[in-house]
Image (cartoon, rainbow, N blue to C red; front, side):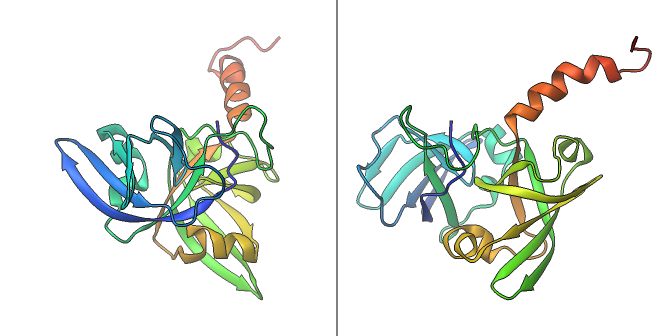
Length: 205
């Protein structure tokens, strides 16, 4: 479990193809506190991966076919930036929202509007993903916990403060870029439980 509060920006150092999967090395930059241990869960752009090795070059991870096909990790190249966050400890502070690190799908940047130091970004997503969002609800974009501003059938918007723009990959996102989307886990369970009542022919009495 994560919080969506990004701890740092990593840089992809190397990517190795291993059949249908990939092994990647990312240099995390400055790591606050104690370094992670082998086997720890770390979210990269909001995707939960296992740290399999660490050396002077950086942290090593493996991403399988499913992960590469359904997240933007399949688009990474050497030099690409990554948001990273370690899993939330039991006694840790939950400052964002409950983020599982299980990406639901991808979104595409539709527009970027700047207002002083702030920025409003609209993203296009499949309608099925948008149905799990509500205005003022929580969303994780590339692993960043944000508050939804507007939500329509196949798109939504968020407003980003200067700190988020400076400390995450969202500050460099441009129209056409792909991002990872994870909707609020609590909303997913509610949606699942209510689904039978919205099915054709369901008895609503």
